Image (cartoon, rainbow, N blue to C red):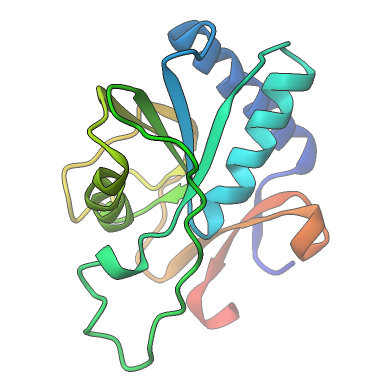
Length: 182
């Protein structure tokens, strides 16, 4: 772990529980709601939220999917190196459903814009909401705002918010680093 600690493991757990409560308040029994983790980093957030909703809050029959947005990105052909695609795992239609996109950090809004295009391959949702752990609110290129936010972070352009998980990076923590440190 390098950089300044923004949120430690204990506070991250509190934040995830609070986000679960907000989802329950707005979606009740989730019969008309599907949760979609945006590949790659939103998947881990979505998995944790579903685990909490099922185990701690007694929610049943949640529909969880993972959406790859690689080929819907507006910078897809502008990069020097090819992008690595992830897999989309959505085994249900979103037609007429309330969709909640889940991601780790909202920065420019371009990933969410790509997800808005990609989700229509699975039907036309009734509506779409956005949940993020971290909102870098002053860094938008597009007019996209989250419906659910764990925390807001104000960072300069050369700084990066990094969400780390026990299973992949060895620790549940959110840090702020300089691009040179990454």
